[in-house]
Image 1 (tube, rainbow, N blue to C red):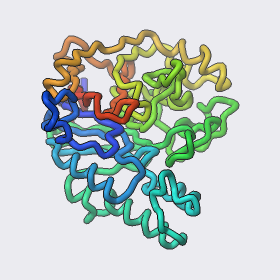
Image 2 (image 1 turned 60 degrees about the horizontal axis):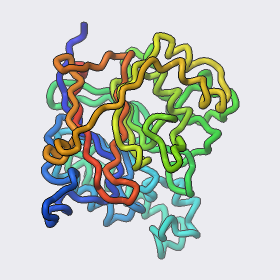
Image 3 (image 1 turned 30 degrees about the vertical axis):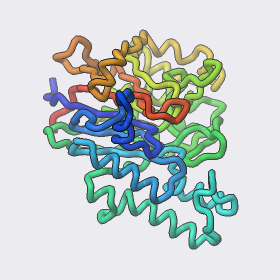
Length: 351
């Protein structure tokens, strides 16, 4: 059995410029998203760092991230982080973006300069993010060494199904996450960086970080409609990571343990139409789902929901058989930072 290291992962999403000290004046401070958040070996932010991607908003988020005690901090963009998506900006130059995010930008050169400035803040070696220990992940697979001696293999993607003309969008009939061989037969495959399968990977994905949820997993909006991506569900069933974390759907905050069936890989690679997959196709790949019970009072006191899924805990993750699904949206549907971060202890491979 390969050696592992107990690793604490702090997971947040959809902070939308919220700070950790905004609740200090409340009496009593009732919201759990406040300083100090629990220390962790690894921080993950699943996107929607801002409201509309202005430079000032990015700095507000970096101010918040700076306060968190974690030696490795991984961040992806979300649909609200408009100026990090160059294609979106260029295609919306005349409109000025949602809420006029780049009001006054008149030319493609000015727009290009604005995008470069936003991306350099997060990606350049001398940009603020990197100099403060924050790693911005582009779409794809990334293997990262942690200070505690563990190594983590992550898949990251900021893309979500098109909705109200925001950034990082793809068509609902498009598959961004599977290889051509695994795509639903009536979908258009556009995957530049498909999620690797568990069965075919020398180094399986430990943590899948996406901005949006997979279909039917913590993705319900009003009238209990599933807003998640069916193609992403297919990909996660193939990859079967230890953790899949995301946000985007604020009202879906929560976590669950999914036990995959022994035939999950065959189901995830079989041929279905999108409708067949959404109605019944996926179900044979899922053996059991346990929604995690949450002590909200403890979450407020500890500034997070603490879950031990290591071999020393009462419930441990079985690689390739069990995935913790986490919707880590900090904002609720009213854009109030009312939800707690997730603090997950997990066994990761020793490097």
